Length: 251
Ligand SMILES: NC(=O)c1ccc[n+]([C@@H]2O[C@H](COP(=O)([O-])OP(=O)(O)OC[C@H]3O[C@@H](n4cnc5c(N)ncnc54)[C@H](OP(=O)(O)O)[C@@H]3O)[C@@H](O)[C@H]2O)c1
Image (cartoon, rainbow, N blue to C red):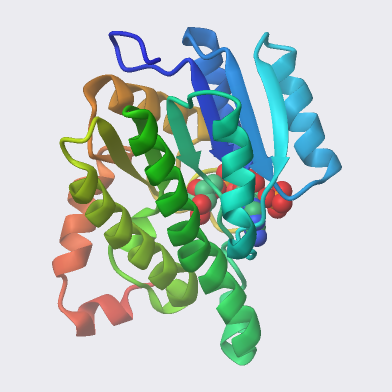
């Protein structure tokens, strides 16, 4: 069960090697989290991630999970929830893709969309139902500031995140009053392997800063969290910018 401050004792990460998710797990383990499940594609990196959290004192297990295999999601999440209550599900998987390549290769673009959107829809609905069944818990969904307005340079990834963001807001409304809390987290540019090699965007931040914001959002039971917070105003201006102006920005 969560404590009086909304912090979880048990955590399920979907996308178990995500640098943002692991920074969040480390922060929550330093507070109160004792049990962690890392769901992801089996790999040495997933095993290393689990070992690193075990070394911090958390009972950590892995479970095979592939966003691109929604038919397997019931079994993967079912295995976790069968072992005990989960206070927090952190949906952290996603791919950035390669916009130029994906525009030329529709099958690759579809894989990006299926990972970021339909895979997340499937996993989030299954997680939400399990949380509702136990009567408590939070679902935290990492969307992106990119969800606010799709950019020329990133619209395949951005449109999937926009869909996921809208979906997660609707799911939050559907679950309002049930005891299950949905929090949408919209980071801007975070320095992780996902962005390595890219020119750094203004207001760039770190996985640790996202983890801090997630913890604060859980304590406040927030519905939407921007990281850094200043992005909320910036993206509001970007969202309302005339299209002809937006198109010419070097974004
Ligand atoms: N970094 C940023 O600037 C930024 C900004 C805004 C939002 N976000 C979002 O935050 C989340 C975490 O990003 P991050 O920066 O921590 O990136 P990351 O370290 O690259 O983590 C991405 C995660 O997604 C997993 N994944 C990819 N395809 C998968 C699939 N088919 N099935 C299961 N897992 C899959 C990866 O697992 P494998 O180890 O199997 O590849 C990895 O665990 C993502 O949703 C990302 O879009 C990131």
